Image 1: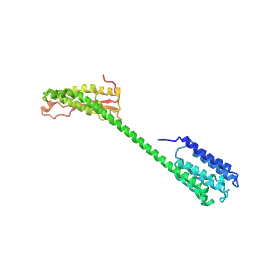
Image 2: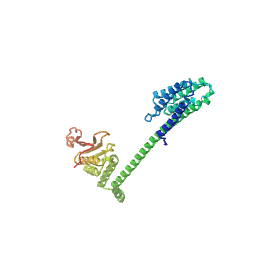
Image 3: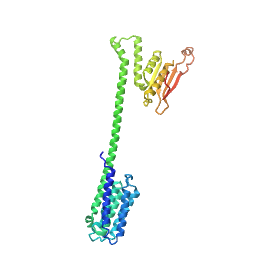
Image 4: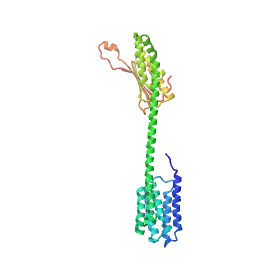
Length: 342
């Protein structure tokens, strides 16, 4: 979005205001008594300096906007009280343009209601003091038009700013969505490549034998199917060490379940490898019949929870005794920053 430097805008407004002060000072000899006009000039200078202060916020404070309105009400009263409304006062009516400039600044700084109050006060004073015909000859209509244009532009710029922020937010969301889609696509490609690496030799063997497999080969297919499921459900719980220990546990008859629910997404590099190596060591070091490894939730100090269950002694059932519940053979909570597994 194209922006105008604030310093340039303030400089232009200061030049316009200075021009009005020069006109007011130049015409001090026209009023019957110059004191009220000089007081009006001083009040106008103070209001302008406060309104154009460089470090002030964009939205003018309410007290300052009210002060500007009070100055715009006082200037016509002070200067007009020393002039003849029926005569051609020339530059002595400098306050008309000054009120328009000050109220334009007020409207630009997001106080349009009070800017209209100041402009309305100037119109009412002119009609009462010099008659309706003076609205055009003294430039009151022009000052009101300035205020109107400032109000319209301020609203248009505010709307443009809101639209720009909404567009920027939409662009960030679109970028995040695209990055997420690319990440999902990359992960799918990685998982597919890993699945092909695992299953391709057995698939070729099945094709070569026409689907006729012996018992050992059928059991190997079941192991491969479980490994493929691990690639889908285990995700970041897998590295070569974990895959090796999981397959070894299954070959000895254990049931292994790996569940990655996103708890490791923030781990990278050595931290993730340490967690996975600790998990592999835990799976390889237990004789449990059922092993479950699950990632912990976000914000937890634990990265992975590993549970190993051993079935009850079958001899108890043979003797007619009630079989006890499975025993916990392994319970391990792997922290997010464990020591490297040996």
